[in-house]
Length: 309
Length: 273
View (cartoon, each protein chain N blue to C red):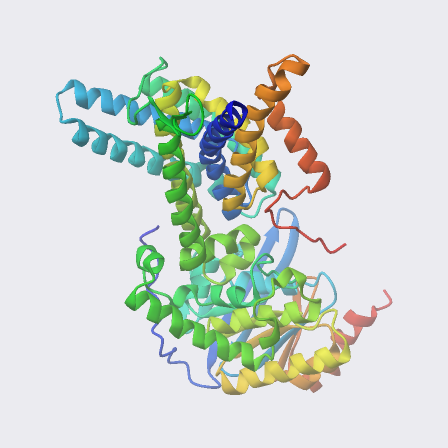
């Protein structure tokens, strides 16, 4: 029973931390789905959202606002910043590039990344800012079944709940609204979407706004875990294998991919690590992604594109 | 969005009477750098007619359609649609004023089903906001149902009911062309632009498509401008034909008149210099 309890604990911890990867990956999927652009700036957007949120929160609590008012206002402030960013990106970066190649747009988002990283730290500061939005202590469950019980981090559970709500909302948005349908249309063909009367500039604004809000949600969870700091942008690198495994165009794929990466790397670290020298956690996800690429290049849930040759 | 967006058209259609000029182009010139795609072209499209645009490859036919629906902006010339002079046209504005089109190389939303593709044609006709659609409550639900009915009628008309749920990327070419026509029809356009609607089709598919185009003209009250290479089709379908060559208009008139025109024959067959 000791072993079973341990496996379960590692598995649960891994799955829940995987959900946190999914939160970051979701932002990528949204923009890729709706504009066919791999948005390199997603990590920078998480940083920007986190900084805007935490700095505003610090300012408000310093001026003795009640905590829940301060949190609400800080969230609104950060959402406003993300809306402004979405507008600026659409107006000055993507707007002039309508109907251009995907690679051109990708390069443009690399440029946007550096501007966002620089600007956000210039405006909001570049220290490590602690954030306490969610409880960070742990639960012990199943004490009677397994010796010592199973330890679960409360923050991870919050992250899972939030990700679940987010995915449900996004799924309904994409499937049931005319804007969702318009988003999918724009992703498939710019010119055709314009010809049926879909204003591309508006759609791109909406999608960057939604991705910005997802980045804000990711920032609140990750900021609580790590503190809001520059290294949060590296989460984008962890999201990459999640995307490859789940498929770039699939919202559920981002979740399943995150779960697989999270659980896989924790299990590998504990059970493979001692045999091949440890430190597996850092590269396991990439190897897993490589294997998926070999077998199923479009990812587990991605759309298979059949090209007419 | 910009403030100068023109008001949406009234659903009751324009006041243009059958036979009157619906769209006119005067002295339109379009160039890309040094390449002159259109040179001083003038012609008009009358309400209720089928107007063919023909010419050898590279004559500027597709450029012409792109100018009409706002993808390209001509450097010179005046375009008048429904009696109003147009400025600074954008594709989605053209769409909101009642111009729909299909593309030479089918431009469908490949990952979406036939039904969803055609539903996108209703985008401009749907009024309810994002939130009420997400909640799927009363007015938004009724709106969705109403538009769905309109789309189902088009699906029945085009005889594509059996592929309603199939992602269009999996359909054969001829059917994709049909779905694309359906999407344009869902917009209930006043002017329908068809860019080579029969390219790559076999005889039977061409006959079907011709039948659809004639029915659209007669029963949907739609004016049609079409580009087509199959001369038999052009002669059968169109009321008037305009011929372009190297960006210039070289002939304009009834199919029979154009067919006998020496300049047209030279353009198609080449002429000894």
